[in-house]
Length: 377
Image 1 (cartoon, rainbow, N blue to C red):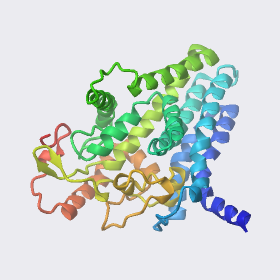
Image 2: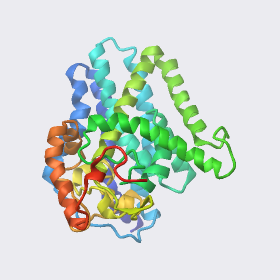
Image 3: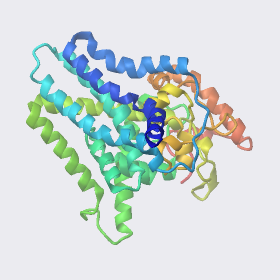
Image 4: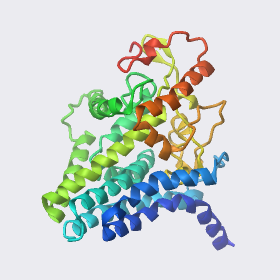
């Protein structure tokens, strides 16, 4: 009876393990070379977009009284992924730098696919892990971020983004009418500065300088340096270049998702630099089933910001009346974000509708529309 119960629990969690199929896929494409190297981005973007159309929406919500023990098959996928990603990145660096059949273009293509995996899956899993109480899980999250040279994302996300989302103090919130190609360089610089300042300010409140070894940036730099050194030892300078290339693609994937998640949504300014509390309607929600399997319910982003400590299987879905809805899952929406005229045509009317629905009393949105300092701090 116990065995059958465990089988049932595993079967329920199994769709969220689909990301593991990307590991053998990227190895196969590296072995085949040529145009096959494009198969990984094609799978994550187009195949899952098609699967969303076939599988539809998941509007059901899990029981919030479910315990961590009952969620072990869901949690396990995030715990095994760091080792799989580590072996894949550095194993492919070893293989690719010695393979005769891979042209320069194929090498670029293979590690573009690796970056899609380490960004779409790896950073997403690190996001889940960094929110947990167990130090072991948070360490796994740090290791995943070090593999894409974006370790400060942990400090930025926990200390800045969750606190200031939907306000000018959050560099990750995309402003209304701000195209992705303007947002991307802004967030790269802004998130690094804001995360370092947040850690520095925390240390200052303890009468410690930023140079104190308890500053997590020293851990971040050490882990990232270790990853670069390993790439150098395994693949020489070509290995370092391939490692940096996949990290860049991973960061681009992350910030595309960040752009989509809060585009144009702002918390009401209450005066004197204060804002209303974060609510479900301050994030875009998407209930598309297949892409939520791939992204472990990241698209239920409204609930994540409302209750950040909930594990991904327990994230709740919201109706049209409770939170704004994306017309498609992230695979399609991130592609649209790369084409600003298309993005604005799709999303700007939805932002205006959101404003009318939640803030009919605000008649002048001009101060909120500015990309810099939309409202006074």
